[in-house]
Amino acid sequence: MIKQLMKDPNTQLTEELLATTLGDSFKAWKVFNENILNFDISLEWRWYRDGGWLAKCTYKKKTIIWASVSEGFFSASFLFSEKPQFRAGIQELDISEDLKNTFTSSPKGKWFSIAIDVYNENQLSDVYKLIDYKKRAK
Image (cartoon, rainbow, N blue to C red; front, side, top):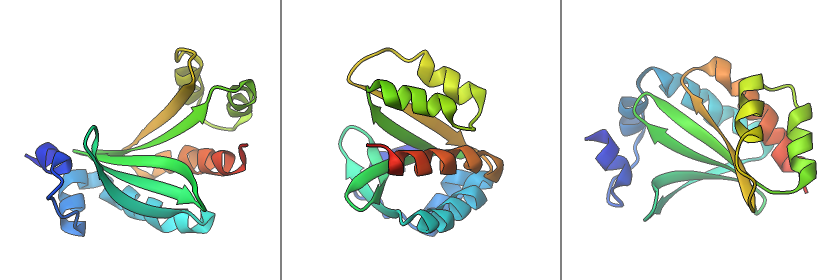
């Protein structure tokens, strides 16, 4: 039922719906929303035919994160163009080895992405490091 609501363009994304959908991870969502302001990131909910409701998080005009809400967690996805300096730069970040391995093994193409499924506040550290990196990336 909730999954269908997140795909429905007529759904009103209220705090109550987000809290119900996220469950225990709602606290991490609130902390994330508060802390992205420290990065001058603005969050805007948009509905997309191919993805439902997504939060587009931007710095100036640059999209930094795409966030989506699922039952019990939210995903923070970062999209990078396939340039050698991005893959190398991410390898140098102090983020979990699992994340580094995920994108290292991703197929080479025009773009690659890193997605973090956030269930609790402890996982936000890697999200913030990637936000900082993506803001600086050219």
